[in-house]
Length: 330
Image 1 (cartoon, rainbow, N blue to C red):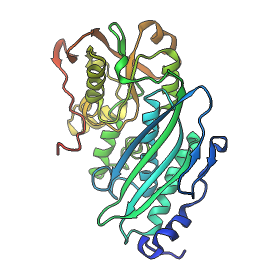
Image 2 (image 1 turned 180 degrees about the vertical axis):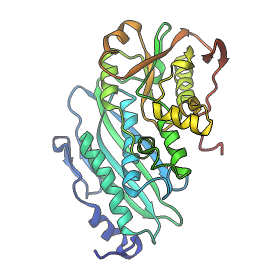
Image 3 (image 1 turned 45 degrees about the vertical axis):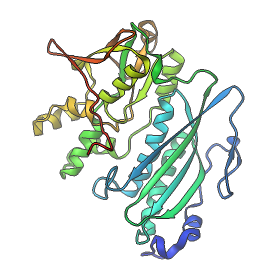
Image 4 (image 1 turned 90 degrees about the vertical axis):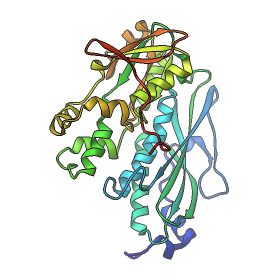
């Protein structure tokens, strides 16, 4: 199609024909692929199925200033696949429902699917189809991912046990710091932080490793560590104590914090969209994997039943409330 074409000019079926290519990366799991009323996929014997969904709305989760169309597609897939990682599961299939304004350039849609395909190819996840409709204002994208995990082995938020180590993988706060940099015209100065916001990587390998090692509870860092820890504590009925000085922060996050006089820990606790993992595991199991991956012990599960999450900093203990991103508290 020629340049300058829009979603409205192409129409629903023209748009579908344009995007329908390079969808299948694991054909052995597909019985009926995209293009029919429904896709048919198979799960190997001995596995449970896992399903999750996430939505991204223009103006809330992304803007033209913070993400390219490629970034939006990549990010949407990553936040969905990250939910699989947090269950110790493997992402297998993905469907995408999109609501688009008529005036949106077709080139934007091309970029969206290029980003999603890049992620699906990297993690070998089949694109099984979806839906296309109009939107009276901005872009609305809803992704649904299906995955698989060995029967009875899914890791939930509710399994934390007294005596467990609380851990964080990778570093936290990079995405929120990257968003700050992008919104303040500093993205080129802090490219690694910007990339962590625009194209996060779902930690599927780490989720599988932690499941096999016997992690008792897992959560992905989508809304900030304060929220994730409180979700685990509430679901598991435990009390956790966190050494806030041990929360892993990248040097770039620390440096940006110094430059603008912001405590970088705030980004880690309340920012979200890092899509690293946090959870609990027994000390003996932790010792078996600590050399294999980037994982940092930050605290302990101290009581069951318990009363929430407490943070230690500079010798002082305080209740650590969930202050991560809340879509209805704006």
